[in-house]
Amino acid sequence: MRTLTATSLGPLPRVGFLIAVSLVGTPLAQAAGLFPEDGSQTATRWYHDPASLRELDVEPSLREALAGRLELRDMGHNYEWIQDIALFGDDGRFWVQAPMPAIDKVLGGLTRGVFSDDDGAFGGAYFRRVSASDARELGLRTKELKWTVVEGGELVSGRFSDGSPYVLLAHDVLTRSESYLRHLRMDPSQARNLIAEDLEVPTENLFFLRAYPHLDLILTAAPGGRIFLHDPASTAETLAQLKNRADTPVAERARLDRMEKLYRGQILRRGYALEATGEWEFRLIDENERTLSADPRFRVRRVVGVFDDLEGDEGWPRVVERVNFFNGFWIHDPSGGRIHLTNRAEGLSSLESYWRRLMREEGAVDARFPGRYSSGAGLDCMGAPAP
Image (cartoon, rainbow, N blue to C red):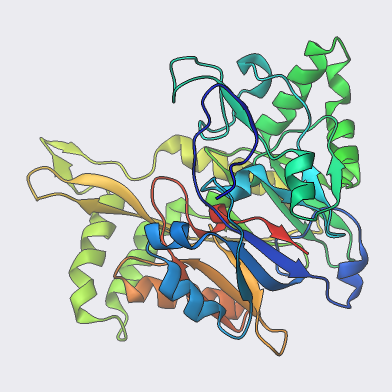
Protein backbone atom coordinates (compact mmCIF):
# COMPACT_ATOMS: atom_id res chain seq x y z
CA MET A 1 0.00 0.00 0.00
CA ARG A 2 1.42 3.38 -1.00
CA THR A 3 0.94 6.40 1.27
CA LEU A 4 0.00 9.75 -0.26
CA THR A 5 2.37 12.65 0.31
CA ALA A 6 1.10 15.18 2.84
CA THR A 7 2.74 18.29 4.26
CA SER A 8 2.09 16.89 7.69
CA LEU A 9 3.26 16.10 11.17
CA GLY A 10 0.64 13.38 11.41
CA PRO A 11 -1.12 12.22 8.23
CA LEU A 12 -4.37 10.28 8.41
CA PRO A 13 -4.12 6.97 6.54
CA ARG A 14 -7.22 6.17 4.57
CA VAL A 15 -8.19 4.25 1.45
CA GLY A 16 -9.88 5.28 -1.79
CA PHE A 17 -10.21 4.75 -5.49
CA LEU A 18 -10.05 6.74 -8.70
CA ILE A 19 -12.39 6.75 -11.67
CA ALA A 20 -10.73 6.77 -15.08
CA VAL A 21 -12.57 7.92 -18.17
CA SER A 22 -12.03 8.15 -21.89
CA LEU A 23 -13.08 10.95 -24.19
CA VAL A 24 -15.95 10.32 -26.54
CA GLY A 25 -15.90 11.62 -30.07
CA THR A 26 -18.44 14.42 -29.65
CA PRO A 27 -18.09 18.21 -29.75
CA LEU A 28 -18.53 18.28 -25.96
CA ALA A 29 -15.37 16.23 -25.52
CA GLN A 30 -13.19 18.64 -27.49
CA ALA A 31 -13.22 21.52 -25.01
CA ALA A 32 -10.23 21.83 -22.68
CA GLY A 33 -10.47 22.08 -18.91
CA LEU A 34 -11.59 19.92 -16.03
CA PHE A 35 -13.07 16.52 -16.62
CA PRO A 36 -16.84 17.22 -16.72
CA GLU A 37 -18.83 15.49 -13.98
CA ASP A 38 -22.17 15.86 -15.76
CA GLY A 39 -22.02 12.61 -17.78
CA SER A 40 -20.88 14.18 -21.04
CA GLN A 41 -17.81 11.89 -21.17
CA THR A 42 -17.69 8.12 -20.85
CA ALA A 43 -16.05 6.27 -17.96
CA THR A 44 -14.08 3.14 -18.92
CA ARG A 45 -12.06 2.22 -15.79
CA TRP A 46 -12.20 2.55 -12.02
CA TYR A 47 -9.01 2.70 -9.94
CA HIS A 48 -9.83 1.68 -6.40
CA ASP A 49 -8.68 -0.05 -3.24
CA PRO A 50 -10.62 -3.27 -2.53
CA ALA A 51 -10.20 -2.87 1.25
CA SER A 52 -12.05 0.45 1.13
CA LEU A 53 -14.98 -1.00 -0.78
CA ARG A 54 -15.22 -3.91 1.63
CA GLU A 55 -15.00 -1.63 4.66
CA LEU A 56 -17.87 0.54 3.41
CA ASP A 57 -19.91 -2.51 2.37
CA VAL A 58 -20.24 -1.43 -1.27
CA GLU A 59 -17.92 -3.77 -3.18
CA PRO A 60 -20.41 -6.49 -4.32
CA SER A 61 -23.09 -4.02 -5.38
CA LEU A 62 -20.57 -1.76 -7.13
CA ARG A 63 -19.04 -4.65 -9.05
CA GLU A 64 -22.51 -5.69 -10.17
CA ALA A 65 -23.40 -2.16 -11.28
CA LEU A 66 -20.14 -1.76 -13.23
CA ALA A 67 -20.10 -5.21 -14.84
CA GLY A 68 -19.56 -4.88 -18.59
CA ARG A 69 -19.31 -1.10 -18.32
CA LEU A 70 -16.13 -0.20 -16.43
CA GLU A 71 -12.94 -2.05 -15.64
CA LEU A 72 -12.08 -2.16 -11.93
CA ARG A 73 -8.38 -1.69 -11.15
CA ASP A 74 -6.65 -1.55 -7.78
CA MET A 75 -5.17 1.91 -7.22
CA GLY A 76 -3.56 1.22 -3.84
CA HIS A 77 -3.73 4.79 -2.51
CA ASN A 78 -3.97 5.39 1.18
CA TYR A 79 -6.78 7.95 1.64
CA GLU A 80 -10.49 7.20 1.78
CA TRP A 81 -12.01 10.30 0.15
CA ILE A 82 -9.82 10.58 -2.95
CA GLN A 83 -12.24 12.99 -4.62
CA ASP A 84 -11.22 15.74 -2.20
CA ILE A 85 -7.51 15.61 -3.06
CA ALA A 86 -7.46 14.60 -6.74
CA LEU A 87 -8.45 16.59 -9.83
CA PHE A 88 -7.97 15.65 -13.49
CA GLY A 89 -8.23 17.60 -16.70
CA ASP A 90 -10.05 16.14 -19.67
CA ASP A 91 -6.69 15.87 -21.44
CA GLY A 92 -5.49 13.35 -18.86
CA ARG A 93 -3.23 15.56 -16.78
CA PHE A 94 -3.35 15.33 -13.00
CA TRP A 95 -3.92 18.77 -11.52
CA VAL A 96 -1.64 19.40 -8.53
CA GLN A 97 -3.06 21.78 -5.92
CA ALA A 98 -1.46 25.21 -5.48
CA PRO A 99 1.42 25.37 -2.95
CA MET A 100 -0.48 27.32 -0.30
CA PRO A 101 1.03 27.44 3.21
CA ALA A 102 -0.51 25.06 5.74
CA ILE A 103 -2.01 27.75 7.97
CA ASP A 104 -5.64 28.27 8.86
CA LYS A 105 -5.85 31.89 7.70
CA VAL A 106 -5.14 30.65 4.15
CA LEU A 107 -6.58 27.12 4.03
CA GLY A 108 -9.75 27.77 6.00
CA GLY A 109 -12.83 25.79 4.96
CA LEU A 110 -11.05 22.55 4.07
CA THR A 111 -12.30 19.40 5.78
CA ARG A 112 -10.34 17.91 8.67
CA GLY A 113 -9.25 14.96 6.56
CA VAL A 114 -7.42 17.35 4.22
CA PHE A 115 -6.08 20.08 6.49
CA SER A 116 -5.51 20.93 10.14
CA ASP A 117 -3.10 23.41 11.70
CA ASP A 118 -3.90 22.24 15.23
CA ASP A 119 -0.94 20.35 16.69
CA GLY A 120 -3.32 18.50 18.98
CA ALA A 121 -5.78 17.36 16.30
CA PHE A 122 -5.39 13.96 14.64
CA GLY A 123 -1.83 13.73 15.93
CA GLY A 124 -0.51 16.96 14.43
CA ALA A 125 -0.82 19.64 11.77
CA TYR A 126 -0.97 18.63 8.12
CA PHE A 127 -2.07 19.61 4.61
CA ARG A 128 -2.88 16.48 2.64
CA ARG A 129 -2.15 16.86 -1.06
CA VAL A 130 -1.05 14.58 -3.89
CA SER A 131 2.27 15.89 -5.17
CA ALA A 132 3.49 16.00 -8.75
CA SER A 133 5.98 13.22 -7.94
CA ASP A 134 3.13 11.05 -6.56
CA ALA A 135 1.24 11.52 -9.81
CA ARG A 136 4.28 10.82 -11.97
CA GLU A 137 4.85 7.54 -10.13
CA LEU A 138 1.43 6.54 -11.49
CA GLY A 139 2.53 7.45 -15.02
CA LEU A 140 0.43 10.60 -15.10
CA ARG A 141 1.31 13.89 -16.73
CA THR A 142 0.73 16.87 -14.44
CA LYS A 143 -0.46 20.45 -14.41
CA GLU A 144 0.37 22.54 -11.35
CA LEU A 145 -2.28 24.98 -10.14
CA LYS A 146 -0.85 28.32 -9.01
CA TRP A 147 -3.66 30.03 -7.13
CA THR A 148 -6.26 27.41 -6.27
CA VAL A 149 -6.77 24.75 -3.61
CA VAL A 150 -10.14 23.04 -3.99
CA GLU A 151 -11.61 19.86 -2.58
CA GLY A 152 -13.53 17.76 -5.07
CA GLY A 153 -16.72 18.14 -3.04
CA GLU A 154 -16.45 21.92 -3.38
CA LEU A 155 -16.50 21.66 -7.17
CA VAL A 156 -18.97 20.50 -9.82
CA SER A 157 -17.92 20.73 -13.48
CA GLY A 158 -19.85 20.30 -16.69
CA ARG A 159 -20.58 21.51 -20.22
CA PHE A 160 -23.26 23.84 -21.52
CA SER A 161 -25.27 22.81 -24.57
CA ASP A 162 -22.77 24.65 -26.83
CA GLY A 163 -19.91 22.54 -25.43
CA SER A 164 -18.28 25.31 -23.39
CA PRO A 165 -17.08 24.29 -19.92
CA TYR A 166 -18.44 25.64 -16.67
CA VAL A 167 -17.36 25.17 -13.06
CA LEU A 168 -19.46 25.54 -9.91
CA LEU A 169 -17.41 26.26 -6.79
CA ALA A 170 -18.13 26.76 -3.12
CA HIS A 171 -17.49 30.31 -1.89
CA ASP A 172 -14.76 28.94 0.39
CA VAL A 173 -12.59 28.36 -2.70
CA LEU A 174 -12.73 32.06 -3.58
CA THR A 175 -12.06 33.10 0.03
CA ARG A 176 -9.08 30.72 0.16
CA SER A 177 -7.47 32.19 -2.98
CA GLU A 178 -8.10 35.74 -1.77
CA SER A 179 -6.40 34.88 1.53
CA TYR A 180 -3.46 33.37 -0.34
CA LEU A 181 -3.03 36.52 -2.41
CA ARG A 182 -3.08 38.64 0.75
CA HIS A 183 -0.47 36.31 2.24
CA LEU A 184 1.69 37.00 -0.84
CA ARG A 185 0.93 40.75 -0.54
CA MET A 186 -0.94 40.66 -3.85
CA ASP A 187 -4.30 42.13 -4.83
CA PRO A 188 -7.09 39.75 -3.64
CA SER A 189 -9.55 41.22 -6.14
CA GLN A 190 -7.72 39.21 -8.83
CA ALA A 191 -8.68 35.90 -7.23
CA ARG A 192 -11.68 35.15 -9.45
CA ASN A 193 -9.70 35.67 -12.67
CA LEU A 194 -6.75 33.64 -11.41
CA ILE A 195 -8.97 30.72 -10.35
CA ALA A 196 -10.56 30.75 -13.82
CA GLU A 197 -7.08 30.71 -15.37
CA ASP A 198 -6.05 27.78 -13.16
CA LEU A 199 -9.18 25.77 -13.98
CA GLU A 200 -9.05 26.60 -17.72
CA VAL A 201 -12.57 28.03 -17.80
CA PRO A 202 -13.79 31.46 -18.98
CA THR A 203 -14.30 33.76 -16.00
CA GLU A 204 -17.96 34.22 -16.96
CA ASN A 205 -18.39 30.42 -16.72
CA LEU A 206 -17.18 30.31 -13.12
CA PHE A 207 -19.99 30.34 -10.55
CA PHE A 208 -19.64 30.57 -6.76
CA LEU A 209 -22.36 28.95 -4.67
CA ARG A 210 -23.18 28.56 -0.98
CA ALA A 211 -22.55 25.11 0.42
CA TYR A 212 -22.33 23.45 3.81
CA PRO A 213 -20.34 21.37 3.85
CA HIS A 214 -20.01 20.49 0.13
CA LEU A 215 -21.80 21.23 -3.15
CA ASP A 216 -22.06 17.58 -4.20
CA LEU A 217 -24.37 16.95 -1.24
CA ILE A 218 -27.07 19.35 -2.49
CA LEU A 219 -26.89 19.16 -6.29
CA THR A 220 -25.83 17.06 -9.26
CA ALA A 221 -25.28 18.02 -12.90
CA ALA A 222 -26.43 16.48 -16.19
CA PRO A 223 -25.30 17.31 -19.77
CA GLY A 224 -26.24 20.60 -21.39
CA GLY A 225 -26.26 22.78 -18.28
CA ARG A 226 -28.96 20.84 -16.46
CA ILE A 227 -28.72 21.04 -12.68
CA PHE A 228 -30.71 19.01 -10.14
CA LEU A 229 -30.84 21.16 -6.99
CA HIS A 230 -32.19 20.01 -3.64
CA ASP A 231 -35.69 21.19 -2.68
CA PRO A 232 -35.99 20.71 1.11
CA ALA A 233 -39.32 22.54 1.27
CA SER A 234 -40.92 19.74 -0.76
CA THR A 235 -39.60 16.80 1.25
CA ALA A 236 -42.68 16.20 3.41
CA GLU A 237 -45.04 16.29 0.40
CA THR A 238 -42.75 13.99 -1.60
CA LEU A 239 -42.74 11.47 1.25
CA ALA A 240 -46.53 11.68 1.52
CA GLN A 241 -46.92 10.99 -2.20
CA LEU A 242 -44.54 8.03 -2.05
CA LYS A 243 -46.27 6.63 1.03
CA ASN A 244 -49.59 6.62 -0.82
CA ARG A 245 -48.40 5.24 -4.16
CA ALA A 246 -49.98 1.92 -5.08
CA ASP A 247 -46.58 0.40 -5.91
CA THR A 248 -44.93 1.34 -2.60
CA PRO A 249 -44.25 -1.82 -0.56
CA VAL A 250 -46.56 -2.07 2.45
CA ALA A 251 -43.59 -2.79 4.70
CA GLU A 252 -42.11 0.65 3.90
CA ARG A 253 -45.20 2.78 4.52
CA ALA A 254 -44.83 3.13 8.29
CA ARG A 255 -41.22 4.30 7.95
CA LEU A 256 -42.13 6.79 5.22
CA ASP A 257 -44.98 8.05 7.42
CA ARG A 258 -42.59 8.63 10.34
CA MET A 259 -40.13 10.47 8.08
CA GLU A 260 -42.96 12.64 6.75
CA LYS A 261 -43.99 13.52 10.32
CA LEU A 262 -40.38 14.47 11.07
CA TYR A 263 -40.39 16.98 8.21
CA ARG A 264 -43.78 18.34 9.32
CA GLY A 265 -42.47 18.96 12.85
CA GLN A 266 -44.66 16.26 14.40
CA ILE A 267 -41.95 14.12 16.04
CA LEU A 268 -41.43 15.23 19.62
CA ARG A 269 -38.64 14.58 22.10
CA ARG A 270 -39.31 15.81 25.64
CA GLY A 271 -42.02 18.05 24.28
CA TYR A 272 -39.92 19.69 21.55
CA ALA A 273 -40.28 19.03 17.84
CA LEU A 274 -37.23 17.51 16.18
CA GLU A 275 -36.03 19.49 13.18
CA ALA A 276 -34.94 17.87 9.93
CA THR A 277 -34.12 20.98 7.93
CA GLY A 278 -33.39 24.43 9.36
CA GLU A 279 -34.40 27.73 7.84
CA TRP A 280 -30.77 28.49 7.02
CA GLU A 281 -30.71 25.57 4.56
CA PHE A 282 -33.79 26.85 2.74
CA ARG A 283 -32.18 30.28 2.32
CA LEU A 284 -28.83 28.84 1.22
CA ILE A 285 -30.32 26.65 -1.51
CA ASP A 286 -32.74 29.34 -2.69
CA GLU A 287 -29.77 31.69 -3.10
CA ASN A 288 -27.99 29.07 -5.20
CA GLU A 289 -31.03 28.70 -7.43
CA ARG A 290 -31.10 32.46 -8.04
CA THR A 291 -27.39 32.46 -8.90
CA LEU A 292 -27.73 29.63 -11.43
CA SER A 293 -31.04 30.75 -12.93
CA ALA A 294 -29.60 34.19 -13.64
CA ASP A 295 -27.64 32.55 -16.49
CA PRO A 296 -30.03 31.28 -19.20
CA ARG A 297 -27.58 28.51 -20.16
CA PHE A 298 -28.50 26.62 -17.00
CA ARG A 299 -31.70 24.62 -16.64
CA VAL A 300 -32.33 24.18 -12.93
CA ARG A 301 -34.78 21.62 -11.63
CA ARG A 302 -35.57 21.51 -7.91
CA VAL A 303 -35.92 17.92 -6.67
CA VAL A 304 -35.76 16.21 -3.29
CA GLY A 305 -32.53 14.23 -3.14
CA VAL A 306 -31.74 14.15 0.59
CA PHE A 307 -33.89 12.39 3.19
CA ASP A 308 -33.42 12.48 6.95
CA ASP A 309 -34.57 9.47 8.95
CA LEU A 310 -34.95 8.58 12.61
CA GLU A 311 -33.15 6.06 14.74
CA GLY A 312 -33.45 5.07 18.38
CA ASP A 313 -36.60 4.18 20.32
CA GLU A 314 -39.84 6.14 20.47
CA GLY A 315 -38.84 7.74 23.76
CA TRP A 316 -35.56 9.18 22.46
CA PRO A 317 -35.56 9.42 18.65
CA ARG A 318 -32.54 10.90 16.87
CA VAL A 319 -32.38 12.53 13.43
CA VAL A 320 -29.88 10.98 10.99
CA GLU A 321 -29.17 11.81 7.33
CA ARG A 322 -29.20 8.36 5.79
CA VAL A 323 -30.12 8.97 2.15
CA ASN A 324 -28.34 11.27 -0.32
CA PHE A 325 -28.88 10.71 -4.05
CA PHE A 326 -26.98 13.81 -5.23
CA ASN A 327 -23.67 12.33 -4.07
CA GLY A 328 -23.28 10.03 -7.09
CA PHE A 329 -21.78 10.04 -10.59
CA TRP A 330 -22.51 9.01 -14.18
CA ILE A 331 -21.43 5.96 -16.15
CA HIS A 332 -22.52 4.79 -19.62
CA ASP A 333 -23.93 1.54 -20.93
CA PRO A 334 -22.53 -0.01 -24.17
CA SER A 335 -25.01 1.96 -26.28
CA GLY A 336 -23.84 5.26 -24.77
CA GLY A 337 -26.86 5.78 -22.54
CA ARG A 338 -26.21 7.44 -19.19
CA ILE A 339 -26.68 5.61 -15.87
CA HIS A 340 -26.60 7.46 -12.56
CA LEU A 341 -24.75 5.56 -9.84
CA THR A 342 -25.48 6.80 -6.34
CA ASN A 343 -26.10 5.77 -2.74
CA ARG A 344 -28.68 3.28 -1.63
CA ALA A 345 -31.76 4.23 0.34
CA GLU A 346 -31.04 1.81 3.20
CA GLY A 347 -34.06 -0.45 2.85
CA LEU A 348 -36.47 1.99 1.16
CA SER A 349 -36.88 0.69 -2.40
CA SER A 350 -39.68 3.25 -2.88
CA LEU A 351 -37.14 6.10 -2.59
CA GLU A 352 -34.80 4.41 -5.06
CA SER A 353 -37.68 3.95 -7.53
CA TYR A 354 -38.53 7.64 -7.11
CA TRP A 355 -34.96 8.69 -7.99
CA ARG A 356 -34.82 6.29 -10.92
CA ARG A 357 -38.00 7.86 -12.34
CA LEU A 358 -36.49 11.35 -12.03
CA MET A 359 -33.29 10.35 -13.81
CA ARG A 360 -35.21 8.67 -16.62
CA GLU A 361 -37.35 11.78 -17.06
CA GLU A 362 -34.11 13.68 -17.73
CA GLY A 363 -32.80 11.25 -20.34
CA ALA A 364 -30.90 8.67 -18.29
CA VAL A 365 -31.46 5.02 -19.13
CA ASP A 366 -31.28 3.95 -15.50
CA ALA A 367 -30.15 4.68 -11.94
CA ARG A 368 -28.32 2.20 -9.72
CA PHE A 369 -27.65 2.37 -5.99
CA PRO A 370 -24.39 0.61 -5.04
CA GLY A 371 -23.10 3.33 -2.68
CA ARG A 372 -23.57 3.91 1.01
CA TYR A 373 -24.02 7.38 2.51
CA SER A 374 -22.89 8.19 6.03
CA SER A 375 -21.56 11.18 7.97
CA GLY A 376 -21.73 13.59 5.03
CA ALA A 377 -19.94 11.39 2.49
CA GLY A 378 -20.90 8.73 -0.03
CA LEU A 379 -20.08 7.13 -3.35
CA ASP A 380 -19.11 10.32 -5.20
CA CYS A 381 -16.61 11.25 -2.48
CA MET A 382 -14.64 8.06 -2.99
CA GLY A 383 -13.19 8.75 -6.44
CA ALA A 384 -11.90 11.33 -8.90
CA PRO A 385 -12.68 11.14 -12.64
CA ALA A 386 -9.78 10.89 -15.09
CA PRO A 387 -9.13 9.85 -18.70
